[in-house]
Amino acid sequence: MIMSQSNSIKLPNMSNYWMPFTANRQFKSMPRLFKAAKGNYFTSIDDRQILDGTAGLWCVPAGHGRTEIATAVGNQLLTLDYAPAFQSSHPLAFEAAERLAAYMPAGLDRIFFTNSGSESADTALKIALAYHRVCGNPLRNKLIGRERGYHGVNFGGIAVGGIAGNRKAFGNGLAGVDHIRNPLDIAKNAFTKGVPADGGIALANEFEQRILTLHDPSTIAALIVEPMQGSAGVVVPPAGYLKRLREICTQYGILLIFDEVITGFGRLGTKFGADYFDVIPDIITCAKGLTNGIVPMGAVAVKREVYDAFMEKSPAGAIELPHGYTYSAIPIACAAAIATLDIFSNEKLEDRAASLSTYFEQAAHSLRGLPMVKDIRNIGLVAGIEFEAIAGKAGAMAFATYLKCFEMGIHVRFTGDIIAISPPLTIEKSEIDRIFNTLANAIKSVAAAGDAGLDASNYLKNEQAWAMHQSL
Image (tube, rainbow, N blue to C red):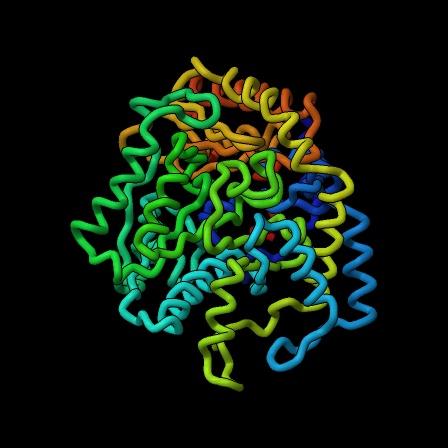
């Protein structure tokens, strides 16, 4: 590995930027900075090529530096840079909605644009609550989420989300929220390849038992779940689970929301997780891959009958849904979305992901038997490698492995005691091999070093040299 020369690298002043979901003090003592990206690779600030094993932050399915999207955005900036979204609009907003509606599962063809997955989740929850109210059922005001669920970081999303660390700093959040059990069962399903075969129906039936025992079902507005829980560490639902949830929601008049911010746009080898599991929800949220991560944009797709209820039951001339954002469907985001959908159409990226999924699965499960590896889970082009917990050092093994991989030229994602792999759908087989071979070597290296291997300061010696600027 070529070591950086501190006098040849100019770092930004890192004092002012409060980084999201980051240990700021640790990061700023040994920063990991990218300055360029193309294809499946980042270029680090010291000119190393870093293979992107995470598609950015799950959001660059078509690979980096796509000229088609950049050109569309650049041309749009010089044509119409901004148009207000309230009581006026622009043609591209309607074209983007039409294109996205055609990409969605059948029936989900009414599109509300947002700027992120977090906004999409909160928008979907508000639509669900408002839908029941406009239909004359204002007592349907409870929301059900799932343990270990992730629905962004706005108050609605963290309320129905089930990751404790994302909630404990912010108080009670929304009232009237409950959670069902998450589908991860390592004791029964460890090292399952793909979808676990057993337990799905019984697990879904717990939802029905919970709402009948603890809630009047007629008070529940919606159930929100991710088809595959990504941020919680790649939790794949057992066979039949989502179909049974759909049946229960239909029986009791509860709207079913799929949060597809991660599973949308080809990640599972289909357009959406709803397609993969053959389950059609009432509402789908998406973001990330919608613009290939180029411009912030999210969307909420609803069934036509949900939209029609607002149009038919609201007073004439009234704003049917008093909700929206200054940057909803801004022209450059619409241009980026249309260009991205063109790439998916032309390159059949969903089919490409599906064709690589078996190879990817075999590569992921080649890590079985390595030190500390407790479980491996996979579906489509996503895999989670979970480590044995270390008393008093939660997440230390995964973080050290992440740092070692970065040092070795691979970017992976860590969450708790889990490493997640979700490369661009443009990944090649040789690059899949490189990701998992590097990950194997990193795991062995960290484990062999014992306590020293868990010490973050022992990694990234080249990046640590950059910190010299702080003393200048």
